[in-house]
Image 1 (cartoon, rainbow, N blue to C red):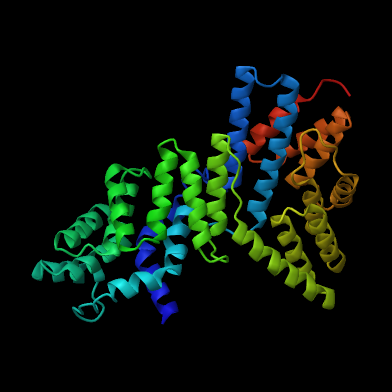
Image 2: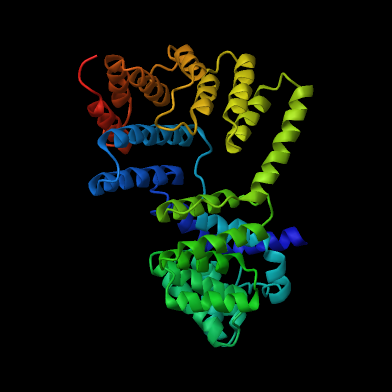
Length: 415
């Protein structure tokens, strides 16, 4: 029954989730939020140069490192699962569904739909129902859900307001109205929306939707510390394996970096991942021929920030699948992750990249890293060759190509 209630809550939120899943928003810059963070870092670097806070040499080294991470993020996006859900969609959907038992045990199940005939259109059916029964609050709620599925937000707002005016200010009605007000205002949590989420929390103090939005309001009003504290508290109350935790953590990282604050750690998720990784490693010790298992272990170690262990796992997977050069490239990237601008490139990583270069001659990450390796060794002509080839394989008008051209221009003239 608990699972059914959670699914019903998620289904009720589908109308709100669909536009959010299609529109990533400014925070994700239309792609992955990691890339948005790195672009913000580049813009901040430019501002630091203008203010005289860093020298040209320091800025050049830092810029190369940020560009490297951007290309790595681009590669991950190309090869990873398609369509990561944005923070808000996950919070509104999966996370709220996780708390659905409390919501529906308080509200009760929705009234059964009025059947107006075989194949009747739900919007038309409920529109007719509320026309004939204008004082039926649950009918208006069903109508609001139906027209929300059609993305008719103005009509949905009117319907939810009617539900509340009829004396049925349920948690769903109030929170749904608050969400629509935020969408109407292009993502801004207004005074009205704040009041609605405040009312939501009076009915359900742990409501994840209201808590997320109220934290977002703090960030929008220039109080990032309070926003981060509220998001941390929300994470602590969510199940350790809630899929949305990673995206909330990304939003927290963006907010913290923009404000120059330490990035809070998602301790529950970290503990959960460490336990799962330990179990996977133990299984692979008994079943060492599982190539996919080793690749998964490599990805898991990357999440934990254990680059050497990730590289070892990727190389074990590569040894079992000789025709997959991307695994060795992944091992090299694991060794390069988190490298500071002044750090030398690990010889093991460079050796792996040179090994796969004949098979991945047009791979952006391989070209970038090998160019960077040559630049670090002051082999500028060789670096120029790699990055020149990189520019040719990237979309000409894309940000990555622009940054690759900027890296080329930053190279000293001569060998």
